[in-house]
Image (cartoon, rainbow, N blue to C red; front, side, top):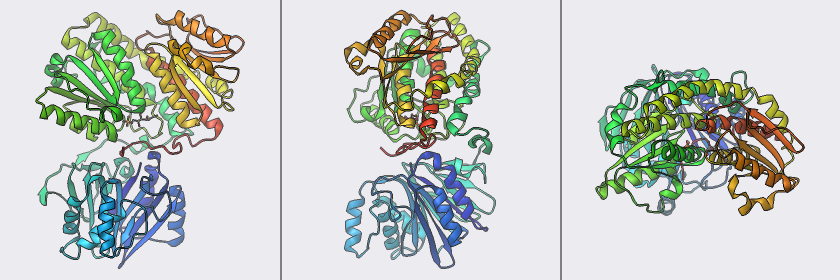
Length: 612
Ligand code: F6R
């Protein structure tokens, strides 16, 4: 998705803007640009493709300045061309924008009637012209922006500069993330604090509807024209968290960070083999009352929710529904009293999940229905965390690779901890069972570490996938969602068409696809369904399919002709899906590397999907 970086300083900020954009590259984009105020002019460079192209152009043209805005664009309105890249300029105004201005066509018609000429197909350009026009009847850049904002419909974050205001950067947050990085004698904005971590660890998180004016030494935040106080928060995230270190790709680094990330996530909730007394304490009264759970999420986070459904119902007898947020939000679902609406999201900014949450909250209030909302999320400062009654953080650290890995496994660990807590409060799980799952959770990082030892074996298997066009993933029970997740990982980074199926569904259709050329990946933990799964494997082999099996070391499944087995360390059936996530991640990673795709930034995808 699009990224914004901007700043106002004493020194030249050209390199800070470029470095900031590079740190946002992981989000996915197709063009990049920047604009700087220099003397009386806006100096602008824009390029299609990577930030490196923009950097080269900037180095050649030597543009420099101490007030500027920069942007990576992920095309929504208009193709990825130089003309459509941000910043957009109108006279002496330059604007960068994340999100969508939904009523842009209407505004554009009005502006064209006033004589404004549009040079792009974007929705953003209207903002530049509107500010330009508003300056004719207002007395400052801030006032002009304040008069424009009520005309805009949609979700947006904006950065705006003007040559007549060489020490002023105006920013707006309305439905799209925006933080202010607080420096000494200089201040910055970004859509993601990660971009600013090399220059500051002090941030102001703007609220929806905030308009801020930044100068070198002052930050003023306004709501409806009134000055408001927003606290400065200090972050302890280190810059090194966001670098690849010795790894070739962020994705591989993040796969290897899973033991540590899980350890962190588990430690916040457990004291020995018991739940900590203070873990989710403030939610206890709400948990006691809930009768059912409705999970809302997208993509990989949705798969985590699917596994949680099995756990909620099997372990603590609480009915659980899980639904893709982009479907839920548009189908007028019945809002049921005493339901826990649980959003799962790595970023906490996913537009569909946020909209599903907000709509549900609104409808519950209007119908006077009592619900509880909660987020499981990896970003402490995200909208989802701020807008829910309760939250539980996954402590995975920043996830840069577009394909979610450590965020997924820590979501599963967090979900398990939440389920233990709810079961304890509702007394639907015994203390003995809590202790035994807790003991296993402590052991989990070590099991993941052992599973990672299979990397070389999985690399060898991946060579057999390079030429394939299609692939099936099969699992049963909690490993059906892992099959879906394996297929999603493989398609998103290697571009091989893959499908995940519940193995029991095979003979109801997908078996017709199986032939000599169809690799079938099987997830075979030691659980009650193992014998049934073995029968499904026979069905595939009888049709000439080639099997790639991730199997429990005691499963009795061995290598044979057209059956390749990677043995996975033993773990209880309950926690097995967390462990079996790892081999499917590694398989997708190696296949993608061998096929030469852009592993960390796969084509057409974005890390944080802040538009619907
Ligand atoms: C796939 C992946 C996506 C995200 C989805 C939701 O590897 O990462 O499917 O899971 O876009 O994102 P979050 O979790 O940020 O809400």
